[in-house]
Length: 367
Image 1 (cartoon, rainbow, N blue to C red):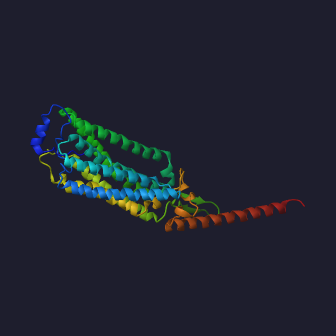
Image 2 (image 1 turned 120 degrees about the vertical axis):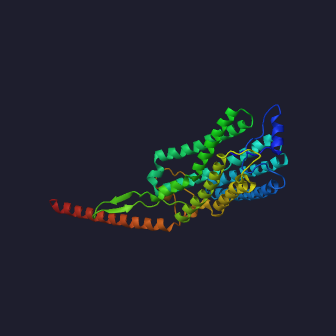
Image 3 (image 1 turned 180 degrees about the horizontal axis):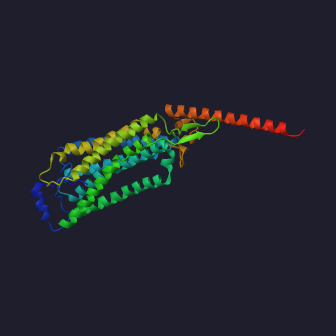
């Protein structure tokens, strides 16, 4: 979690350190530095307006879908994320107007670093759906389910740990305690950077692992590759491209923040990567691209799955060919038709065998 330069520069820092009690201003340089009214207020106002538009768009999509019985909770998650970013930008504007208020700085820092976790969780859920579509038995098996639940629990635990450490860092000047707090923060940003990148290997695993072969007995036997269990609308290639594109952007932002956290600089000597441009580009700009990419590409239709899906085949069996559950994945449809034709041929062969066996039995019976 990043820290920010103290209000008023080195003189202001020494002045506040002489105060009898906490909270104390941060002593290290942080991403974005100290906000100012001339630069941060207008930029934050623009970001604020864009996140308001994002919140309105995602809530509208959510409400329209709910009225049609099309439940897609992730649109609500993006709405919640947009609201969290609205609050973060409001607090940064307040901090710029009241630069010596350390409590406002604490709130602004926590809101800036905590909100992006929602996007990490959304991408993990979408990657899990792709894994279950291409590798149903692997994606639905109990160890993998528990693994994903463990990741979600770890995200919550990491969030609580980071917030506690960040707040406590403003209330102590003990060098030993500050070192331990820094270790906690470094672990947290590293874990989040790995978490942000995790959907990429999950999708790669889904695509590269060979799908299980179903053997059709009789007539010499036919090996049939397990078909993709399709969900939502649109092609699977587009779904995969969306997840990989957004994951790459989020991993870039998380990796940048993690790299900065490992480089300790004094508050009065920030590096180029602490600049305000880096703060807004690697935080809010990336997040806006991700949120609007999902909303405008109608990921509420592309990644929708039937309610109650809990085992292999539930994605495709949940559709009745009408409404929002139509699937236009050409490859999956063609593969399904091929498998159906082969199964029909096997059923015809079994019926012929039964008819011949019955005729021979009847001929062998005494009249």
